[in-house]
Image (cartoon, rainbow, N blue to C red; front, side, top):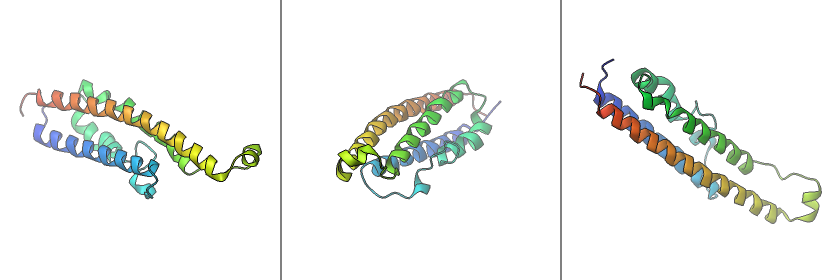
Length: 145
């Protein structure tokens, strides 16, 4: 199947940029910056990258071997982000923990956990970006239309 390489590369680069922007918003959230939830969708099919992957990306590039290599790291990213989201939006729970710790120490523990998850997310993001580089290279090596 012949594809328009320029179009495919342009759309891939936009999707890659959307992922980098999404990750920056997630990092900002973990750093304590208020970020609206629509900037960092939780579901892997709701973010701009996921919409590209399941839409134009699938139509243009779904037949390429390296395209499939993107799915798992992207889905993993969002699974990790779900953990961050739940930690960042958790209500201060009652129980024994509340009796023996201060609200500040519980908040500190939550932020520490969110930072640990963020480190994991960044690692998976780097894996995704490498997979996108491989896909980009495969597109470049395709015969011209």
